[in-house]
Image 1 (spheres, rainbow, N blue to C red):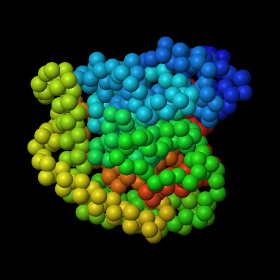
Image 2: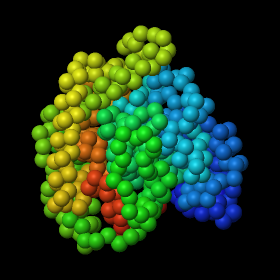
Image 3: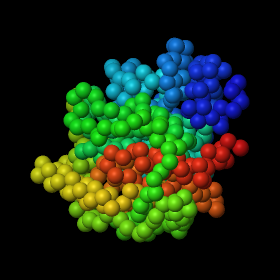
Image 4: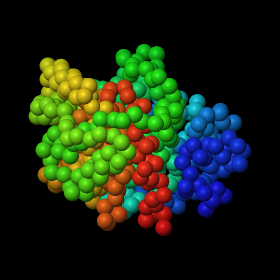
Length: 477
């Protein structure tokens, strides 16, 4: 398959370096990605909108210089636009939506030399912690085809884990970068709120809870991509705190002795699988062996109003998006236009009042202040990424009839992640543990608002101390 024998083992920066040194052309790199997509994607269903000819055309153009120039790339099929292509959000209301412009972040990716050759699977409107849309069918985990690749960026994670490409765009509104990174054995960084632009079609996602970035096999690819995309755009409602230097410069940079808080009890009270608890505790011991101090601590707040506030914010945004699309299509929105649990979320938005929305924003901001105060006495919070290893396919479908099982699984998926969408803090999942059955289990690290550098320094330190890049899923056997 292809002429770059080592392609499966290269991260994006390795591949870009070969291209820069003219040992490989962008067109050859693109053919490697397409060949792997054609061979491996039928088993995992990670790429739902192939754009192979678009990718070939992009790869024929002279790439600009840059850390990732010439590297094949996937966009998530949700929330971002690429001129002349569909963005479906895995929903039939948007099945024929074709963009007439690039999103700001997409324009930055293209300017940085990334060559887009497809769009990756998402659950409808990004509303589940697994990627099983009725429109396209389930996306499967390369580590075990009977298990979920996570969500909502499950297609991105499955494609990267399957070595179709080294790094892919992803978004995160409640854990949607970190959960699939955990499920697929990858590094997944959710940046600080507003670190990457949401424009020009939106100022923020889900009331400030959603942000875009990527999943990757290496920490340095994530840092290099953030250097390409980060920074406010003209007209953005607010910026993230400015960075002191390029993020790539933080990778491998010596960390000072950090004060790390270990938390293995989630705020929503869900039970934690022993493998997930063990993953976090082992990571804490590894941090101690590297010279960092660890104690048991976490931010404390009243969870019930926080839970209700996040549901109202998401539900209101979902309803507004669906109503806007129905109006554009000249139709009346009805339940059959979406999957059952998508409609349930829209109904939350329909029954909430404007005052409910305002109170929800106040609740979220108050919880953000609690988290901010916590980080005045700690440098890092370390938790399991999820309460469970990857879920079996079917449990987290938005069309499931077993609502009780769905609610259990969703609550155990987002128990440790969604808080930091609300507070806006940068957070990352690291692939530091595998179950005896060979399923990946992620460990989450969270940093003070605006401080991606401390996350990248610690993540790269852990990547060296306990490497993961050599692990290959059974799909590749």
